[in-house]
Each structure stands twice: as structure tokens, then as C-alpha cells.
Image (tube, rainbow, N blue to C red):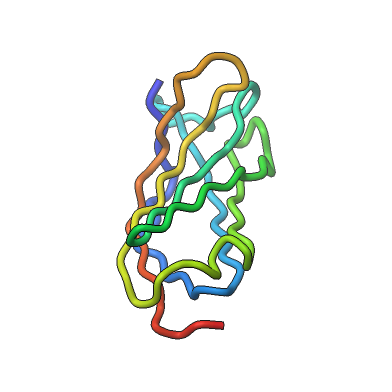
Length: 113
């Protein structure tokens, strides 16, 4: 199974020390809403030498909707003014094969909160 975002997400700007929220809508290869039943949304953010992983929240199981929240504690250690990569995936509750959703470029700002 291959997953994809219903609407593409462009490069994201993350301010170190702030909360970063990314809502998504996921489709399967046939273009139907992905049913999150049996899966947990997860994301890994890599900026420079720093890697942060979070578990997302399903907001509409049958509708393919989920939200990823990187809290202040997740972003405070990110280096300023650097490019990174945010990888979104569906983690099966049984088994080990993650389903890739998207890889999104991101940049941290020079500003720090």
C-alpha cells in the first residue's frame, strides 16, 4: 500500500522553541481516504544533527485526517536557520512495515523563542 497527501504540502517554516502543528489529509493509491484503523500517525523531523520524532493524533479515522504536533520541547533544540526533512508515515499497530506518506522539506528560522 502506498499513501499520499490529498493536498501536497510545501516546505514548512519551524521556529525553534515554538509549537509547530501540521494537519494532514491522507489518500491511498486509489485516491480514497486512508482509514487510520490499525495505524498510528508518526513523524520524524531531521534538522542538522538533531532528530525529533512525534506521534500524531487521528482526527477522523475513516476520513484520512490526522494532525502532528511538535511541542516547544520538541523544537527548542533545533538549530537555527537550517534546512531539514520532515517524514510522515503510518505506523501499523501490528507488524513492522511502516507506510510512508510524505517527505516534506522544512527550514528553521533564525528567530528563536
